[in-house]
Length: 257
Image 1 (cartoon, rainbow, N blue to C red):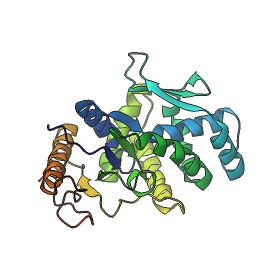
Image 2 (image 1 turned 90 degrees about the vertical axis):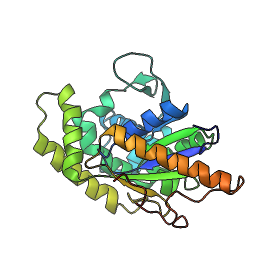
Image 3 (image 1 turned 30 degrees about the vertical axis):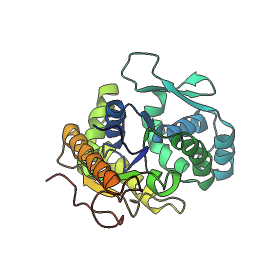
Image 4 (image 1 turned 90 degrees about the horizontal axis):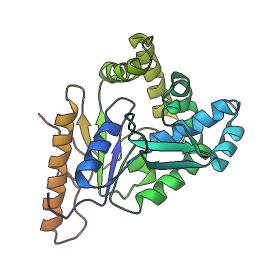
């Protein structure tokens, strides 16, 4: 792939749509930083739960989010993790994937103060460039100027099936019905919150991953990057139009068929 690449790639979508896996693979292929912003909200939620802060107490949760130290580092242990996640110096990489954190992360992340605190850090990292960021509001709030914005979507059932297998590997007692119910509840909270609701950016390219495996999704995104490169070169270095040929309004014309 040519050296000319989007400096910032934003990948948004609901839980289980495959955005984290895609971002990780894409960052590895391009030599970019992989940054799953969702882990920061999980880290805050873990801190809320372990410190005994009432999840419903917005002011207390926001205050904790503003003072807690969250750090992301390259993986130091070969146990399947993609990076180390530290909260006040403590490794919480796997702890933040617990069902308890999963059940409370949406209300915690819906608080405007929490999102502002996390968005500031996310934006600082993103503006360094050469980064693939995955989340729920990257293209709309954190990095609205991202060179390439992608929004992954999939049916709730397909997403629950993926999350079920993830959680079942760590907890054999996990039930698909519980995962589906929890995911649907999270979708409702994420899409209806007043601050930075889950939605695609106007100029995001939509990709439905319901029937696609990760290799097919990655191939589709690589085609989008190639189209971005062609647009960039055709405009002689001017900011290229978002892939899709619709003047930056977003389209699913490039979704794999």
